[in-house]
Image 1 (tube, one colour):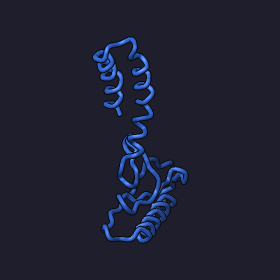
Image 2 (spheres, rainbow, N blue to C red):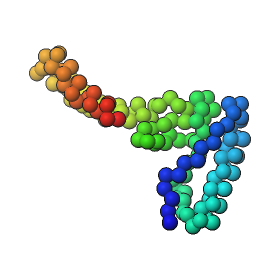
Image 3 (tube, rainbow, N blue to C red):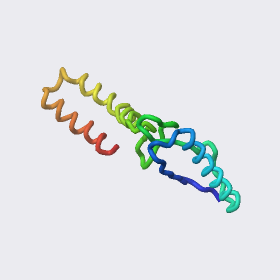
Image 4 (cartoon, rainbow, N blue to C red):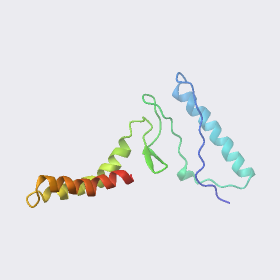
Length: 121
């Protein structure tokens, strides 16, 4: 048996120091692993991540949740970069054609090609 997409969430008081949060999360992780051994469930260590979400005292790497990249510092930098990496080449291509099209036509192309990509992300 293999377990996939298991998320464990724990809420801490704002004043709890990061090392204490890490210790409690590590203890929770060991309990989940113990449960997994008892129930013959395997966990892929490469897919395990411990993240503390906080605007000032964050810990961990950015991760994907429901298709959106989440930064531990909650600034959404990764999500913005992901959107920009898809949109930039198309914007550059549209701007390169400005010698052939009027400004209203360029805006129309932007609305068709770029806004549609933003809505799907």
